[in-house]
Amino acid sequence: MAAQSVVSTSAHTTSASTSADTSHPVDLGPAAALSCRECGHRVPLGPVFACQECFGPLEIAYDFSAYEPEELRRTIESGPANIWRYAPLLPVPADVATKPNLNPGWTKLVKADHLARELGVTGGLYVKDDSGNPTHSFKDRVVAQALEAARAFGFTTLSCSSTGNLAGAVGAAAARAGLRSCVFIPHDLEQGKVVMAAIYGGDLVGIEGTYDDVNRFCSELIGDPAGEGWGFVNVNLRPYYAEGSKTLAYEIAEQLGWRLPDQIVVPVASGSQLTKIDKGLRELIELGLVEDRPYRIFGAQAEGCSPVSVAFKAGHDVVRPQKPDTIAKSLAIGNPADGPYVLDIARCTGGAVEDVTDTQIVDAIRLLARTEGIFAETAGGVTVGVTRKLIDSGALDPTKTTVVLNTGDGLKTLDAVAGTGATATIRPNLDSFKASGLV
Ligand SMILES: *Cc1c(COP(=O)(O)O)cnc(C)c1O
Ligand SMILES: [Zn+2]
Image (cartoon, rainbow, N blue to C red; front, side, top):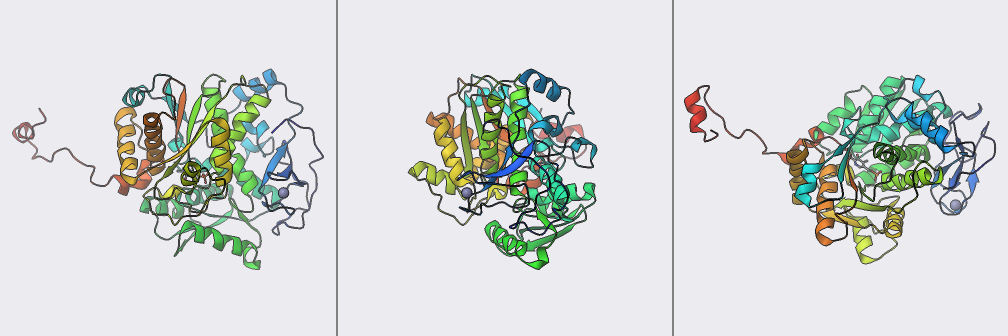
């Protein structure tokens, strides 16, 4: 999206909003309005997510007109070591860093030379390791944006439909902010995710169904008086939430020395993260913060939930829903809202969308741990596994700078690597150790 000068940002009410207090002026920094991704129809900032004209998704439109590249870069570089260094590019008030929140982001960009050698990458391979966030997944980035929107719109309960990581991130953010939380997950998630979602003291509801059932339930709740005053971070606050993924793009470029990577491999659940990483990279070009050169974006899915990669390979524009069956539960969204945009971005940038089997996911988790000392959750196994597959097929160019995302922590998905354990168990004496064959 282009830098654009826009309308005033004050005092809006909106008919389709979900019952929050919008009587006071909304200060979300450079965010000027909501704009439909499909038809461009603009509406004032509010807790709405679908266009009234065409039902397309609403996105944040900004006023970046006052920014000058050198000055903006200096402002960012002197900012805090978290996502708020990019506050001038996000839908948050200027004083956001002073409010109680989890201060996520500025995670490590690890130069993965051992993994590169193993995969045959010569152009520089990096792992953006988002397991280092406060609740150990990338979701803290998006929740932090939604929290500011919830505050701005006067919501008192923070909620979400989640494949696991989001529920934990919402619970923690609400605890820090002093809000109530009530989050919804499929009942059969990994124990690590369930505990993470419950430990922060909010309410956690397991639903007997898939994530897509959970999501449908939440949409119903939003339309009901029972959902009055509730901010669902990934439903009625989705336009704000989604912008948090741009910070991954900003950080990667800044950590590479204000340079775009040639190739980036991103996991795909709903497709929001991939879509907004692309938006973030384009903004950096339009703001003059990086040199304008081509980059390619690759999407990664698990074979057991691969609606987007199946559509990509078949050359389709529409994504046919699937019923998920994979160990990569954080990516198990069978009906991905942003699937068509992922297809579009992969095709326009010269990327691809690929999938790997559960066995390949586990192999990739082990490979990343063994080569770089990074213990990824299943979603990280998906991106590393897909990277390997794309190199083997020639879709990914091993001579180019490549960034692979690890979006979550392996401690939350221990079942995936069950059976990993001691090389030997011995009696506490030297003879026993020598007999083990390890010396
Ligand atoms: C939520 C999530 C993603 C990406 O989700 P999108 O819905 O595509 O934005 C990726 N990795 C992990 C670990 C997640 O929890
Ligand atoms: Zn529209």
